[in-house]
Image (cartoon, rainbow, N blue to C red; front, side):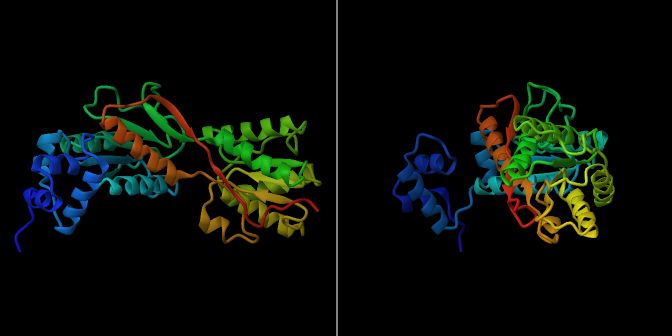
Length: 334
């Protein structure tokens, strides 16, 4: 069976070859009804455009690069999934490269992607702290996701960790809790500081102080959650809620509360952060948590890149709010 041509698509759709070409290339001069008719004809004929010819016409290759530093990370993967979903709807091919946090490897991948004439790049960081910019002299637009660029002239899309901290504590307050502690991870992480700031500010709005007299910074681990909870209970045995800076920490918090025969959530409510389903949904009781909404962040990053390829590239840092996922570890105080 002979391969369908653009002329065949135009004939079936009842339009000129030029109109069919414009419709298939997404050019704005074509009416929506005409574009739909052309797309249906192309689908019916199983028409595959000549990508080389398209590139010559549009000066685009229909490819983008996704450059990550943590392909195994549970934070970068949802972003990549969201971006790939968005690219797939536009039939854009994706080249995925993992720099593994190595700047030399990152530069090697960057050269390789540019040699393939990608139309744009999304750079996904391994942790939510600022990272060096790839520079302003690149021939294609770049969007930074999760980890913002240090250069304010770049466009960076990040999670609103301060807003997430406020959201977590606001939920606990609405559950009637007043002696709320905060156990979190490494103080060198900007995300830990931002979540703590949001939590403390929300408490202050209610005339409350953080239970135990301080934010407990430590490690992003269940072991730290257990150790910090034991210290907290010695200092503040009447605590009635604990906001954990991650779901891993929250699991350790719950372990110690069970050991001390403190009912969760009857006596002490617990909320985590990240919505790492394998931890949160399988905890006992299942953890209420803050979802970072990373797949949505990835989809928007792809949309912003499409706009940049079209000539509209923003700058600065754009923050995306998390969302509350309620499970059984929090409930109104009886």
